[in-house]
Length: 139
Image: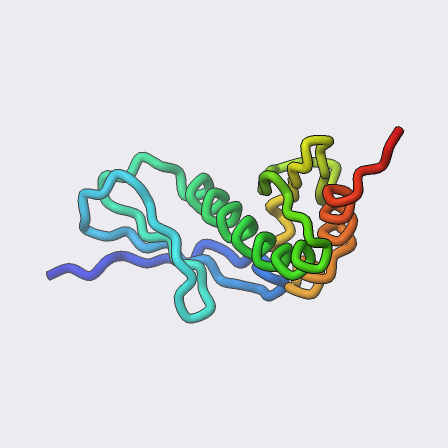
């Protein structure tokens, strides 16, 4: 039985820590990739039949992790404000960390997951935008 091949691809910041990325090619016929955090490393398992670029799988996973982490931090803020946003998005804005729409939707940059937890958790972005959703400014 052959073992899956492994290669270290790079390191990125994940929640403020330098984190290794490891790519494993498995013997499965899976057409997609799976991404997991294993022992402090991001492991991308790539099936032999995978057509999905590794970079796309990694970004998708980082976006999901960012949204999950942002929603967890927002929980405490929204309880204090007694208001919840209508929707929370993790998007790829190039010039902003966050935004609040007039419909009380909050949009955050997924790259916040690359910063340390204290930046995401105590970020003025979270406080300002969730406060804006609860108390919109009148023009």
